[in-house]
Length: 275
Length: 275
DNA sequence: ATCACAATTCCATATTATGGCACGCGTGCC
DNA sequence: GGCACGCGTGCCATAATATGGAATTGTGAT
Image 1 (cartoon, rainbow over the protein chains, first blue to last red):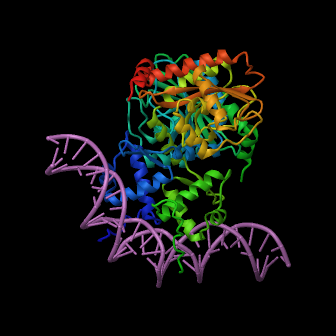
Image 2 (spheres, rainbow over the protein chains, first blue to last red; image 1 turned 120 degrees about the vertical axis):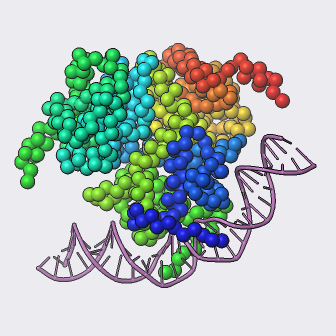
Image 3 (tube, chains in turn red, brown, yellow, blue; image 1 turned 135 degrees about the horizontal axis):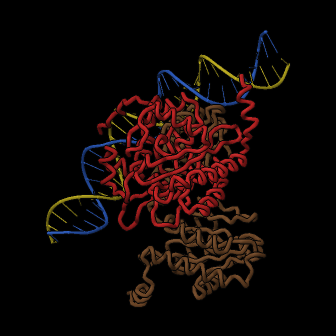
């Protein structure tokens, strides 16, 4: 009977209760590692059984979630993958990048990543794994901070300073290893070095023992499109190998940029002539 | 003012109008190849501007859609990819399959697919593309019928006859090339041959000039888990090569099945002893 | 067999989503 | 230059819709 009124969190002007609640349910299913029962979902959503039940029934009809008929537990459905695939198909990046990534993996035998910058974070779009035993934890579809990854720094280096500051303010610069860059000035200097060098290096800044090299990909508009990286244990990714790998990476990133319609010379001219 | 009452389509007992509408909007964005403007969305959803606008604002807040700030047009957002990735991570299949797929691609130089059976259809989970020029159109996250694909037939062959009949009744057997199997009896015979052979062959049954070989992957419970295939133009995938490729495919599928905990001997025993 | 707990169904109620209307902006046509 | 059209945006009274309490059914353990 008593219907709890919509809590006026007022964070954003637009709210549609059911949608918010349904999507919160999806988020919970995404976070939880295994399936969730109705009883588990309720406290997490702070909603009553029947409400959650109804939501799940509808989500199930749309196949955004599937219910295990044996256990009655809920899990994210394949429809989400279907929609998600369409989302990046639209970006048209992954398919084109794949051959370059494969070739890099082949050449160096280390794990290759392909990412974009989304909401100021690194978003892993594709991964071509090393066959060797030491593997990195990052999975496709997951996120990482920009300031302590090679891909992240490669992409930040393509942005105007004001953008970089905004991202730093939003996400901070938390140290995660002894090598992590933790001040805005140090990051600015690092990005300058990246621009001069043409590629970025993550020297155990995100994970001890892990060294990565990253290069940015530009699109036809000349804007940052994505970045690719090669990651491996520091003992294999020795400092001597860095320039060689960096060169190969820049070449691959450059070729992909070309394929996406990037025209470096013209872009530079336009830049200096603009306004 | 006049609020159109919820049309009693009564297809399914559970309906939540807003959710249905919002998810319909996502489906439309997924179908349309490019971005959609608000004005395009309204007729497709048969809803009024303000309603659609509100829906899109909420979906945008949740990052299921993104609005191009320049054009004001909407497109599916990366959050969907994030959620979708989690959906198959849960299945835990893709990651484990990848090395086998890569190896097959390497060995034969043709495109390798990895699929599951979902709702009686082939659902493409992963693809390792041939470097060669001739490429197949199937994209990850898309669907195909089961009866005219190698992966599909490989998976159908693992199902009890009653299940196969149900799927055939649901989706039909439409001819798409001269070679397509179009009768239930022919399909039953074909599946028997597949079981005897250990792998399935799609001999230009879905696309003229395209020949595929597929093998099923079983999971720890002994049940069908997925299938993998090698696809290529008929002139390269000659009938002479079929046995050799089939053997390699079966070996890969078998190893992956092992990794997933499948125990063939025991399964056979259990099967003959069951009930 | 009995209990406890979870999932499911039903229903009156008032909260919430609705769409009509109006505003502002950019674009192209007269 | 002015005018009109199309599109996105915002507000608001209204009633249709989602809500959660209560009751029922299902399931598994003691």
